[in-house]
Image (cartoon, rainbow, N blue to C red):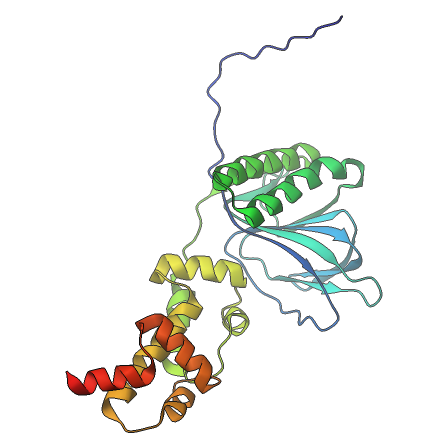
Length: 278
């Protein structure tokens, strides 16, 4: 019987001060609308299957299976699918770091690497992150942070990149814009995708940032705005419920009534009668 024992010296391990903002697994279909956008954080884009193109600061280049594109903060970019074999990919948004060239010691706009020879190692971290975020079992946030650290360190090892800690920039300007836009256009058809396109922010990051800024998601803020205006109209006018629903931006009376009751525990008519008695 053989036995190997590996011992470790007692050292104080430094934790990476990074945060996983989102992880997305997606497929680029032909009807996908690709728009150049900018993030205030680093994004990792890993191709699982298929082929297509990446556009970074007006530079277009092909990407294929097991390619990894690293895009540093504040760099304009987007992905574009091919005509025959659609892209399938995983994207991570990571705040708190930028990648640098090891030789030049300067941050770059982007870098591209192929992980064919070590794809199993790298895909392990990516798929475990997707699994943890999807299932959200107890302690998943801690596990995700540890997996993220391991992934970043493995990435540095494989690509010979340096990293620099970079505090996340708060996107207060964009959040203020979203808040004002909803206040002025709440009667119109507003979707998270539309807000994402208007602010040039990834929609998952926009939700995360707006929650920090306002305490709720953009869509919940929109619903609250519509319900608040509906209450005012129910109290001060004789308009029908259907007319009020349309006036504040709801697509149908039934959906409006459903949302109104969920938010107030009353139907619109019950609310109107209660206000008349008060």
